[in-house]
Amino acid sequence: MTRWVLSQQQHVTEATGDLTLLLSAIQFGCKFVASKVKQAGLINLLGLAGKANVQGEDVKKLDVLANDIFRNALIASGKACLLVSEEDDNAMVIKDPEQRGKYIVTFDPLDGSSNIDCGVSIGTIFGIFKVDDSNNPSEKDLIRSGRDLIAAGYCMYGSYCEMILSVGNGVNGFTLDPAIGEFIMTHPNITMPSRGKIYSVNEGNYKYFDEPCKKYVDQVKQKYSARYVGSMVSDVHRTLLYGGIFGYPADAKSKRGKLRILYEVFPMAYLVEQAGGKASTGTQNALDIVPEHIHDRSGVWLGSKEDVEELESFYKQ
Ligand code: P6P
View 1: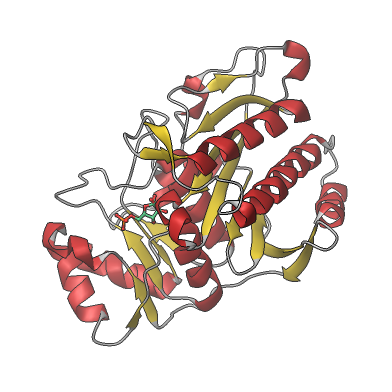
View 2: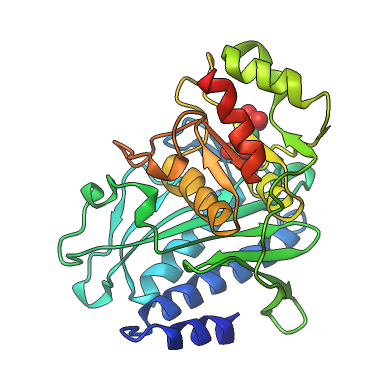
């Protein structure tokens, strides 16, 4: 993966190598977390950390460890100036000017953590923005649309550990070879089919869905299979590779949706669009959303272009 990132850097005349080093730090964090996820049951890392996060969700021990790992790796890279983590109430400005770079990293260090204790796949999701003035970064630098992303990716800790990454010209997948501790390219140039045969949504929330959503689900279940892991990284990874549609719509229970814009919706929408798919709230392209706060949420449907456009047609009607 490092060799591939370096090859991409060579295409960019004004490249300084900063993004390469930042991605190297993220790679390191993913390798470290992958190792701890595998050992969690053996070294007493399962279970609750005994606190709630800004989302009011129970924090698992692995959530805390993963957050510390990525925060330390990103600070040590010297290429970030502002960090936004699902686990931290406020954005973190890199204090030492000597350690400050020109990138903002938004990340969910361990998404799907409600699945940790039962061994279901979980993952890290990240997005990378550039700032104009890295001397005075603030949360205001994040009140911008997902169109400003310069890179995004996720790492899925599943039956195999896979890093999916885009730096703006397509999507590539890299599988961790634990024997050598390197991510090896196994899924070059991932391109989604224009339509799939799987729909993925938590139908336990059906009674809360709005009418267009209910009509879409009633229709799509007549022709597609249902798959829902309940871990966004796993559901998106399957959708990216197999096609189809994944959704976590805003509904009467979650009026702004459940997924967070900056470090779940934007990175996944960016990746899906880079792979030829689409991401939408139902009425707006997900990448065009502009959050008001760093932990703002949004409803989202993403996947094969024709499947998402079919969903959107129910809102148009
Ligand atoms: P529900 C995991 O907690 C998460 O944030 C995403 O990974 C996942 O897509 C969603 O919530 C699942 O939510 O309400 O279906 O359990």
